[in-house]
Image (cartoon, rainbow, N blue to C red; front, side, top):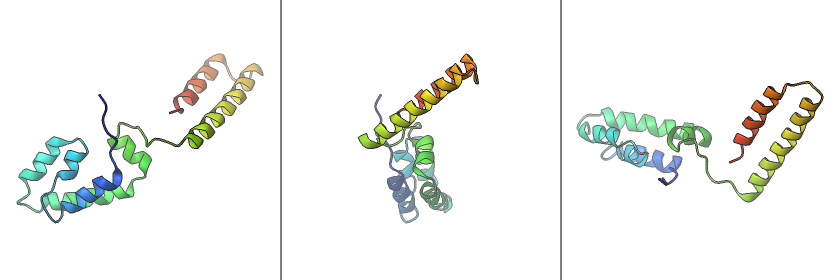
Length: 124
């Protein structure tokens, strides 16, 4: 199932808006409806407003990679073609160096295969 990538800035704006109005919209946006319902149910107390403010700051304090890990199933924003090309080129160079180490007997076949898979997993 395709899910749209969540934006860190939209999540923060929704969280901060919960300090002024009804809290919990950011939880629905981030795919956490049970938390959103709980925030709505507790909206007569200051608890969700304080929690929303703290979460808004937390969203902005995270870098994009950390936010993606937490709320986008680890999938980062699409990269432009130039960035992907540079990444693939760097990984190809690293694999050539790794193969040279294997051929020189400095690493085992097992170590080579582990590192090769790690490098290939970096290509997104």
